[in-house]
Image (cartoon, rainbow, N blue to C red; front, top):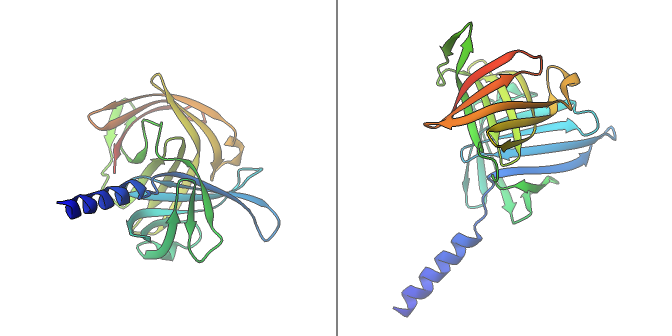
Length: 234
């Protein structure tokens, strides 16, 4: 009985001390050209993305992401998009990591990320796919199983959206930054936008609500165009 109790206490202790990558992580570093860069990684329960930008301008330098799993300290990622190396799409990338309360470190590299949040307090943390969009007064349904996807991945305070095609391995566009969800309002602060750097620094506010697992997203784009979309969590 005593031995069983000790075993249970050991298992409980391991469970409490186990760290999860879910949330947002960030690092600043200097490029070979002397530019100050910022890398932000977002993990949902199933997917992850990273963006690397020039810290002062918001210019996007690189982004990649896909699904992930963690076995002990070994991280395996299956790449779904990569701005620089599209040939990696569909491939598995395996590496070891170390996680504690403050940092996520990739073993054998100089990459060490500081924890921004653990998926809280945002109500929309997770990876989402656009499934419907209002066009000319009618909702147009998108097949979320097709290779062409528009995904949003959110932690508790950071977001990134990405448009990509897994079959053609084509990266289309991305943008991201920080966000809040307060009193039915979803607000974005844009820190980078691959298609138009002039949108960096913009603040956008949308109405949002969650219905039967769907994210209803309404408002106006950075160009002022009306938006009425439905997103489904991956």
